[in-house]
Amino acid sequence: MDINALVDLQLVATHGSFGRASRESGRAKATLSRRVADLEQELGVRLVERGTQRLTLTSAGQLLLQRSEGPLREIEEAMTQASEGSIAPRGRLRIAAPLVFSQLALGRLSALFRAQYPQVELDVVAEDRMVDLVQEHFDLCIRINPGEDGNLVGRCFARDSLVLVAAPTLPMPRARAGLTHAVAAVVMPTYREGDVWSLREGKLLVAPQPVLRLSSLMMVKDAVCAGAGAALLPWSVAGTLVQAGQLKLWGEMGSEVELWVLHTSRRLQSPKVRAFVEFLCAQYPDGRFTA
Image (cartoon, rainbow, N blue to C red):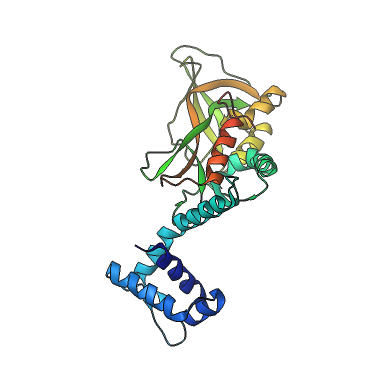
């Protein structure tokens, strides 16, 4: 397959006609038309619908451009760097990250990365939705405890832990073997009726009695500080408040939370992606996430 044919298809799709694509690019209209036709012939499918006013992509054409846009951009960057004799990361770097991590750390980290790599333009989208890196044109994503995905590779750059905290005014139950303590609690939507929180290696059992159900960890933190009840929070969210005496630590849950930076498993990894992965891992040399 001729890569130039893919570039021409992208050019024609962007401008909506062979004529406009020719005028904007300075390339012959006949050449553009021939290369798109040759590509259709090679694939055995129609890629564009040629209307009188404006052409449109077929579903096959849309799929081909969606899947090839990222690799084409990386090849273009690699060729530019090779021609300039430079391997400095540059260009737009689009990142998807969870809300809490973004609120706690990504503003500061983005500024530090930009200072180190001024030719990279960061575009960070903070949301808890599971994005599709290829379809939505993201270079990287940060995920918490990611599942298996053969299309993504990456590194665990930090770990966090869940702790049970409450305002100092709320009496902390005493650990007694076999005794479960009912406690007013602020919970997230993931809470399931009948859950029991096991702390201190099972020595303290807490049966949460939900008084508030909140969808944001930041809201949970504020409600707990205001004395609404106990709550499970990441140490990265609650740690500074515990150390300042605004919250009291009741215990730590046994399981750790892993934070991963992931990118597509394409063989050609751009310098900007590699630079950000290395930068992020270097920010947490002990492997612990602290805001």
